[in-house]
Length: 278
Image 1 (cartoon, helix red, strand yellow):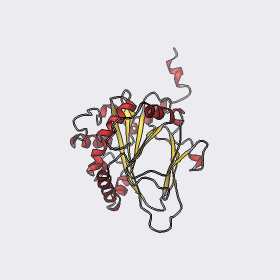
Image 2 (cartoon, one colour):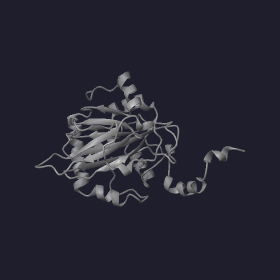
Image 3 (cartoon, rainbow, N blue to C red):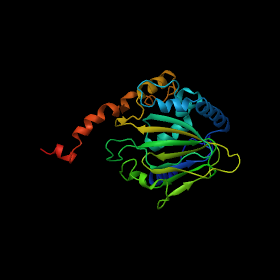
Image 4 (spheres, rainbow, N blue to C red):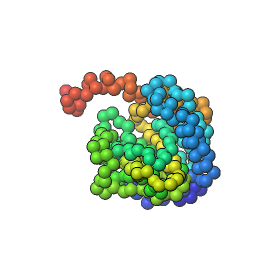
């Protein structure tokens, strides 16, 4: 698929629903890739990523958020991507979060996990997707994206497979040969991992990675950033919805788990269904 091809085929939509992921080779045009890479370098080299991690428990937004970098913010509502997400989730969906990083040689693993946000994990009635943008592509030199297809409908804790680290799992697919600007759209509940490689010999190009997540509307989703209200407000201030996707940054689609989970833990005893039985 080239960057000008805005729609998926019926088969691609069916494949995504069945397998849980979809690869769009060279989806982002070269000029956009170059701009985004420069922003990632700034984000990492000037310490903004580390500051955002250090302050991730604060309700006040950090000094700089990824969506304020410039092209990162506009990438959230990149029109070709929006058209594709409408095919996968319907016309109403909301932005959940944005992460950006540069993985250099010697980067660490990220164990098997899924990213579907739900308390408690109980169903998959509404879709949540993670969009992985690989600006330099993947060449197997630094780390592979590894997925276990069709696990998106298995209702499990996010870290249920953490005990396996990044060990090989049955039916896994290692994704390690992608051209620059490739985008991978994954159902957030699919189990996946970053399987890092040993230090490479010689100079190896970095692994540029941007991860943007979206939720189907119809339920309220738990947020993962304590400063989520400030994040969404900034996106609205910057008009990152392009005047078209009005639901994209609306607070009404989310709740603050940091405020409500202590109460939930008090009632999450025994069989919850018994609370509906007279």
